Image (cartoon, rainbow, N blue to C red; front, side, top):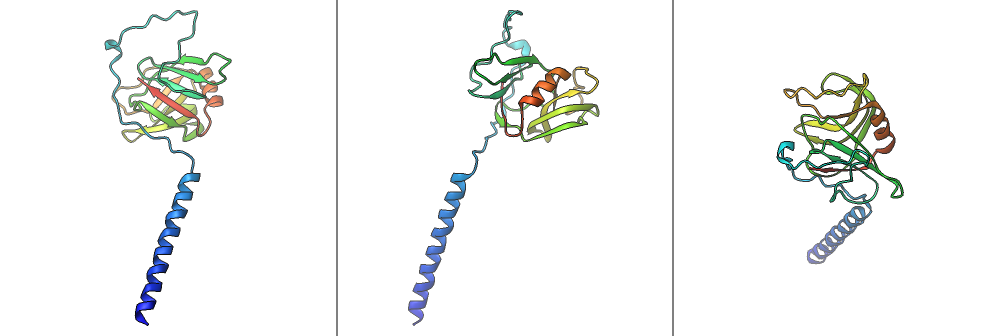
Length: 185
């Protein structure tokens, strides 16, 4: 009798393990895809990169290798952002002032947004669109409420990639939660 009850227990245990495995598979198959964070890559200093001549009458071209579809593209080296949306329309592009902490090259998703807060540098900011963390600092796009765009204090670890208020308005309207952000050198 002990032998048959141990066989029943073993059979029930095997069935339970199989059921848990199947449910785990189903859950992973229905979960939204995770956006991997790329391994950190330090972009080359701007001085060592060849200077690209830009025709001021034409908007800067979206960097090759920045993916496809609707996305925000941020070039650390060019200090520029592109809001790539409708393929029939040219993307909106504008320059930004990078933070002192830079995101690694890779693809991210907008994780949080704030209408108005105080930045890591102590300055009132608006239209904050956060998409990554690095060195313990939240990284995101924002505009200073006073409209200024000075370079950040290099002695402070800041994560705010700053833009004009008008460009901040455009970013806020474009980059909602889970929007794709592609960081290129």
